[in-house]
Length: 87
Picture 1 (tube, rainbow, N blue to C red):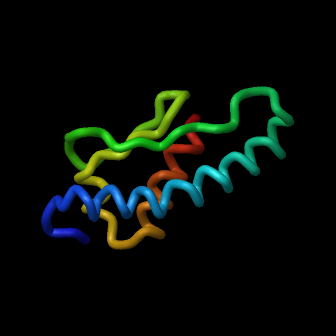
Picture 2: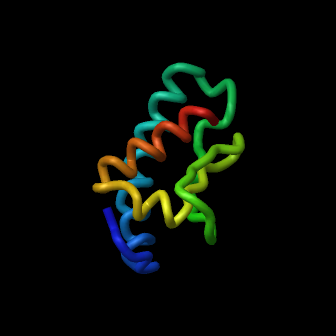
Picture 3: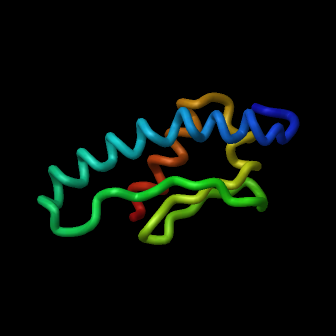
């Protein structure tokens, strides 16, 4: 749990967690849907907001507060994966 919002640390944590989820999510999507729909979704950082993450069918967004709230990269990856599954 980060107690302050260090932009560099927040960005680094998302940069570490997101690619793993994107690769795994893409693989599962392609196996399950056989290319019936788009299976690649970007993961981005919102500029502000409360502890939150969301998916809009095209991308996953995570607030800096959510990144700071998670205790580890693995926990952050879980949040990203949860949202990724909504797409």
